[in-house]
Length: 266
Image 1 (cartoon, rainbow, N blue to C red):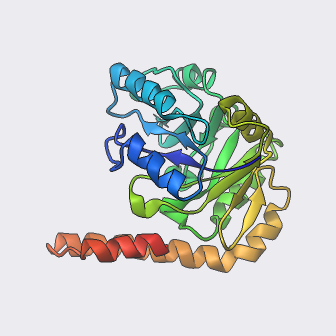
Image 2 (tube, rainbow, N blue to C red):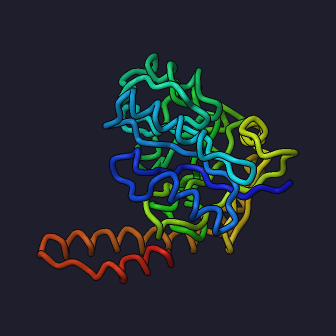
């Protein structure tokens, strides 16, 4: 069976998200999404909250929909997605040794939005990740991946040839729902089968404008194809955030409905 899912998702267990797990499930089922890889922020989370989150993920999973629990862990200036993670080791990982406590327990490890850490990946961090998030909706939009992240993937593959490419929604609220989606083919809707496909790169990342495999053998071709679209998407998002910041400083707020419309489009 072919499954449609999303990676990099937050619920109200994260300090900055708006939908509960139950509300998120309803939204996904309504829109034909069968699995979600959750990545809750650990910054302000307690061990008890982490345990409750994992229990609720399991309680809401059924024969038509699956939550895969996980966490987003700050490490220096980077954020690392621990997919298929049930243990909790604190609010951040200050050293590579403490990061390894997380990565040895996670099923699939992704460096999220590399723009946040200036596209810098040291050898220690590279050794711990399975994939690079070359497309994050909150920084690149819903159309195409960021070409600079694709170029970073190519560079990192000189040291780690099997490094995979993923796309993440970085979902926090309803208007974020959309591409990039992940599709994969499995025999059954189990966490094990989904994780196995993710770890081997046997999945596709897609929007209405583009599709690429997790193994991404043609990154140079993709860079050439989407260079302009990527530039436009990133520029619009950066300019929009700047304008919103200026308006906020002046005590002006755009109507909520307008902001939601813009986010759905982008």
